[in-house]
Length: 205
Image (tube, rainbow, N blue to C red; front, side):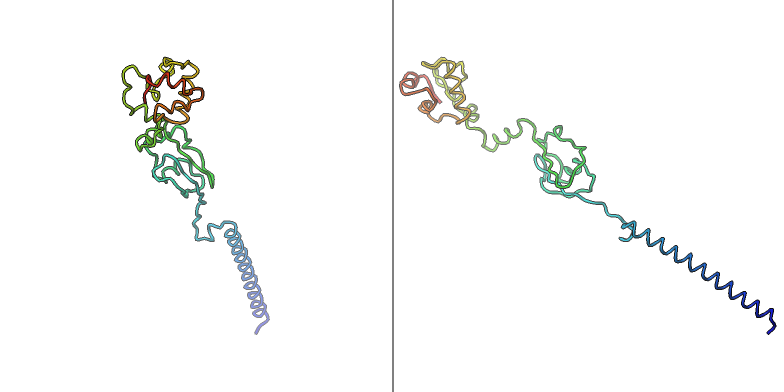
């Protein structure tokens, strides 16, 4: 083989080796770059979809379905309320910040409107005995004072009962409940047998 052909073949082999080495180096760098990107982005490792974090909150009060619910991180009070079926008609939404961002483990309580709880209790028969007595007791016989419903001024008209004692009777009703018999008035501090004898014909329940 002539010398120039042998030199040409050697030069060609060198060029092929250089080109192959360059290609391999670029391929290796590109592969490492892709691996770094995957490691830096867990969402890619999980199939290219990133699942948002979730939090758990406890919703109570005037709610259709109170209980523990799971919502997305960054959710607001309104989202948790809707997840529980929404507000009851008796809910006082103005006392709750529906735009507040929730935190994991937080409790949200939606209060009822003023008077709603009392109305519900009265409907179910659980109202305060004194309150029930004031609305359901019979009218007092003529000339007598109903000690369950009388005002301080009306109680003050009874023998031996002044303004201070009248107020004491009202306070007793509020704390102990309605009188079930006229004799129960003797349980009020300051009213003994003698004072009761003076007023017993002028009081009723």
